[in-house]
Amino acid sequence: MAMFSKEDSERQIVKGISCAGYERNVLQMEDILMKKYGYNRSQLHKSLVREKYRQEMVAL
Picture 1 (spheres, rainbow, N blue to C red):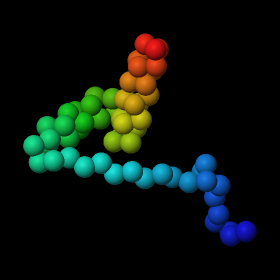
Picture 2 (picture 1 turned 60 degrees about the vertical axis):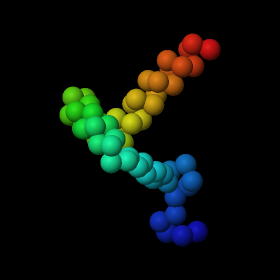
Picture 3 (picture 1 turned 30 degrees about the vertical axis):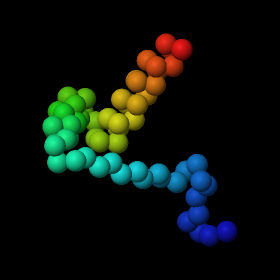
Picture 4 (picture 1 turned 90 degrees about the vertical axis):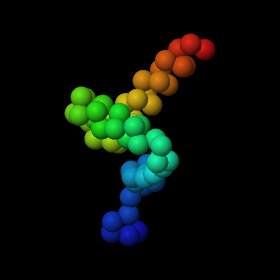
């Protein structure tokens, strides 16, 4: 076993996003929300996904 080996569930998963030039306003909205909630980009994304998931799944 490697000295710094981690279980798969403990490894960080990194995913990138892309925005077209005309979507710069989305990045500005993201910055405003991050400042408002005191979140970094990752925290904001996860929070918004969880919120939307709850909204959508309760509706089923």
